[in-house]
Length: 321
Ligand code: GDD
Image (cartoon, rainbow, N blue to C red; front, side):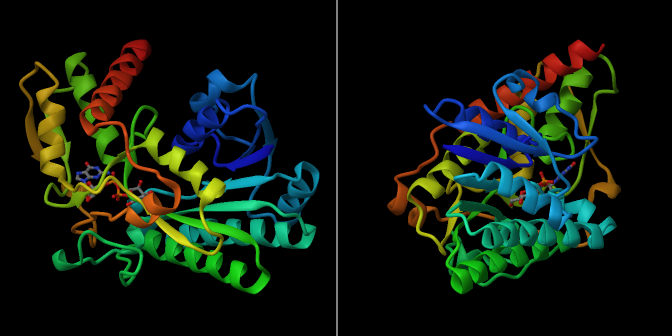
């Protein structure tokens, strides 16, 4: 079975590649851009096939799909950092929507029975009221960032290409996920990296933070990518599934957990530049539809995920200095 992962050099992409390689008879392909950093997949380079492709170029996308003829496509490539979407809304919308469109068109025009998973997001739910939690797939979508809007568009485009052309498309709305290799801008990684640098004496014992009142539902990335795999094994084409832990945690509590793992005394300082024009107040997912369809449930406890992530940063910071 040939699988193609867009965004293979990214956080979730690298974990999905690792997971796919544990399956017998699976050949892994991944798209990379000219200047993509390969750090996340360095350890996999002799086991995977990388193809250079600008997903915004419809002809390039058509060509690689025609050449590889993948049985499965996991479409993870995206501009995925919410704050960037305010600074560069056009780029976010263009990248996220058109890359996906090019993939759908390439599969449609090549007329191949590829199964396609689309990495949608809980950010699509946006403004959620406490009485609407845990959020199921029927909740209204009220995105609060250009990124959220781009994911709504990706989501609905997936629905439409299935409805219009019967492409085998399964949409997954992943809630926050984290673990080793998480990009350093995202909250869990950012806090862990700061702590690792403080422990190493590379910065003052003051951790910079943004909005600590928001609540998020975190899954370990290794559980999330197992979900992506199952979505294409046994998810129903045209359907959308939440992938979540079913537990919401305040960012303040997350900070306390991370600080409790260090023996340094660290004070906390709000950095105004980390505050957003609007921040989704609460994300707490109901994953029962996905569980019923695929048997998926989260397995890795949050404390282990955070411990692994902090140790990842401790090693990385040490190896750099
Ligand atoms: N990044 C960051 N840095 N976030 C902070 C900080 C900080 O210093 N302090 C508080 N936060 C808060 C943010 O305001 C937000 O409420 C929460 O921590 C999580 O922020 P991020 O880790 O940046 O993730 P996100 O929730 O905006 O988006 C992530 O999850 C989505 C799924 O819901 C991303 O991974 C998206 O790509 C993904 O779709």
